[in-house]
Image (cartoon, rainbow, N blue to C red):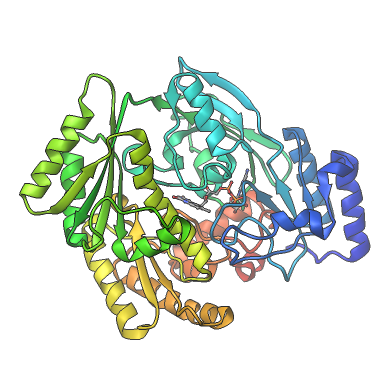
Length: 484
Ligand SMILES: Cc1cc2nc3c(=O)[nH]c(=O)nc-3n(C[C@H](O)[C@H](O)[C@H](O)COP(=O)(O)OP(=O)(O)OC[C@H]3O[C@@H](n4cnc5c(N)ncnc54)[C@H](O)[C@@H]3O)c2cc1C
């Protein structure tokens, strides 16, 4: 357990960090730190003794050594696009240092023959995608925050996004990882091997660990062939049941070429219009559920014909009521702007109950029905917004508070609503975090939901790697448990 640091001790810590990294790389003034201490949604604000910005792996090691010597917690920070309050310390409580990876952003090696990309953890996801494109390949991880989130953050959160259906989560796209451990040593598995069965696959421990086991400094990413064709369709359907039936048929009949399958409850369209008032839906808003399907393939397959034939069948079978296939890249981007705009629109609307849950594919319709019934019965003034990566069983069931409700009241009620929602997820044996992680937002619910053996194993891993609880204290594992 870390001792609370007194002010002279903090001054000495800052001096040591500045001595090692240079004064310009250690931010201590409130106005310099501010950008690192609030999240994208505005739901979370925090505080930190300092923001350290190391420019090399050796400097990351120096930061860890200094913080350990001073007995002060470290929160690694990537692009700060996380949505669960994990990337900076809370405003009250134990003093901590943020180690920002943003200066560690070099592409180390793009290897077309091996179809891999070695890079620093502070590269943004967009940089990784661009570097893959530059050698004629693709890195398929794709999410709304890709211009700002970093590959180290993607690894630490095991990010998902819109292409999980075909390419898996970040976990499935990482062949090697390099991390500074809490004792300051550098651990690496950066060999770029697709097959390597030498003992425990330790990199998997760091993937999804949310900065609680070490600081990821480098990654070897698995690249995929760049598709010659990407086809996008926007559908109007009558129900979530029909949408999920289409999803199952699409995967089977289109030979796993489907890269994305998203549902948008049409109640969400109003949010998109908050961002772009001119963004018209390609099909009638009268259909209760809209679906985005994306298919991609190499040049020897006719993706357009495959998709159009499939959609004609769906309409003939009565599963889809209307469908529009994008005739250009621009039109496809307009379709996606509806999906992405609703997320932005929600943030503009202000505080809302945000969830990121998953259930088995066959349970998606019943889960959505149960959650809607719960909201209508117990919280009739709140407006549900249902959308998500439904092809993966991942649903965002969010609720907007009444427009005139003060934020603090909404947040108080929001906690009760979230608890009710999670009880429904549990009844379906689902997950309260499909891809955003646990952070500080879900720690209690996560820990309470574990069995005794799960908790014991989780703590054993934490104790083995981080016995001093140096790394992101209070994130993932409740502080009281870490200190127990
Ligand atoms: C508009 C929008 C859309 C989004 N869509 C999706 C989506 O579709 N799918 C999805 O999965 N997520 C999504 N997210 C959430 C977020 O973008 C991801 O969780 C992302 O992977 C976080 O990366 P980051 O670099 O911003 O990490 P941060 O927010 O900086 O940190 C997140 C966590 O990772 C840890 N961390 C960061 N970097 C490192 C490192 N180098 N070493 C060790 N730990 C580290 C932090 O301590 C923290 O616990 C979205 C966010 C926004 C704002």
